[in-house]
Image 1: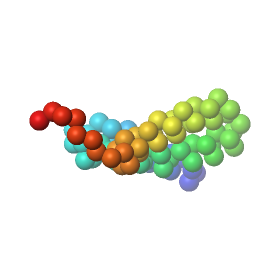
Image 2 (image 1 turned 90 degrees about the vertical axis):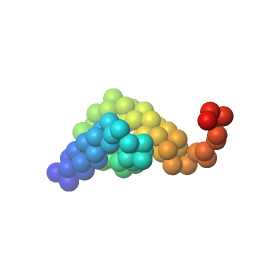
Image 3 (image 1 turned 30 degrees about the vertical axis):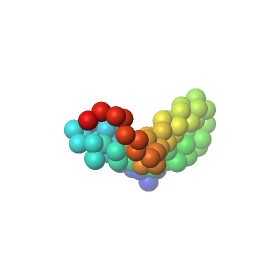
Length: 81
């Protein structure tokens, strides 16, 4: 029950934030998405849903890419004024 609640909360929040018009808000989506991944893995492994486990790997990489792009990668001027 706690795992399902965590999946619902982090998943809904991540999806909601991805649709924000504000960049400063949208960048938090990947943090919520990545925070939910351990719960997805636990649920999929417990249910022996190996295809979902593989899918979780892809989602984890995608959310981690968002963390890299929005939180870690240094800003590089693009030359446009």
